[in-house]
Length: 381
Ligand code: GMT
Image (cartoon, rainbow, N blue to C red; front, side):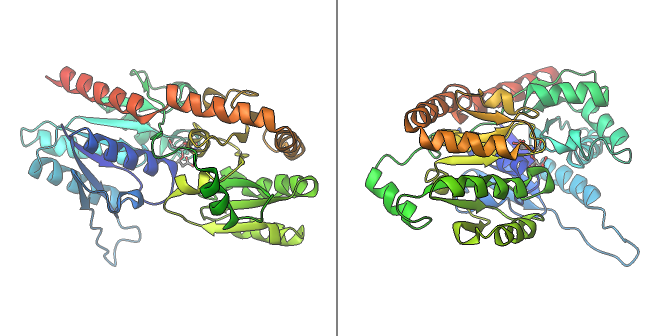
């Protein structure tokens, strides 16, 4: 198949999922065309079967807001025609599904078909999508999509309830490449690599996100402060975003900054995750929680919040521990008890990796997408 993919190319789970999906589809022999305003960051160096088409957005004094969605629609239609795309797959509904809808109409006027699939990821429904200025057009584009998928049952339910969408929505969970994301088997190599992050004997707690307010990075620091009082440990934060400065200030105010490392945006997060003992994900909301899945595949259990689609991923007490949003004391106590009970931690590490392999491995989930594309194309014929 020749598949066009549009996503937000910078840091963020939907862009990661879209990019990894493109890479996996190309590995299966499909031709993948990314259409976006910049090259998705995880693409670099792995371009076999993958093409990238930049969307130029020109500015004009009259445009206070350059219309990216229109430029994107034009580029989608062009690429679809020139590269004879079979279908478009857009990740994150706003504005991508609206642009895809326009592209489909433009091509229809020229006698060509361009079906498109919209994948809903999270705040495109639960936050931004509910904003009245986006809701009607987002609902329309979702409803008019040739196929709609959601990354969790939770998000599907939200979409039906709050958007009144009546068309079928296929739940296809996020996935992880279990060969790339795996524990480091060579204990000596792991110990050596951990030394670059923490002192010998220290536990490593990790956080990975885009540091948006919804991630509650400040809670990460608060939880760690309690853990560090009981257990020699180090907090490693991967990623960057608006809440980083608040988290840095708090680490200083609490006098724990020497035990906290902000690594900023990193490319090979799989290599870092495999060095951690625990992942902290105290989010206000997660429709899925991709970072926790990536950690699980590396045998790193998460201390997380019982929100959105997280309980579909983490089995509380078996593959991680779940708490109410803001329950810093609970999360700290959970982390401390796991770090003190190595047998329980080990059992959780094993159970997490098994879950990742059995339910969320790219080798299972990517074919689900392919079958879904085929069913959409079948309906078109
Ligand atoms: O919604 C966001 O905050 C951003 C969004 C993204 O595009 O990065 O994240 C969502 O999609 C991820 C990938 O499918 C999920 O793992 C996240 O749980 C989801 N975030 C939220 O629901 C807050």
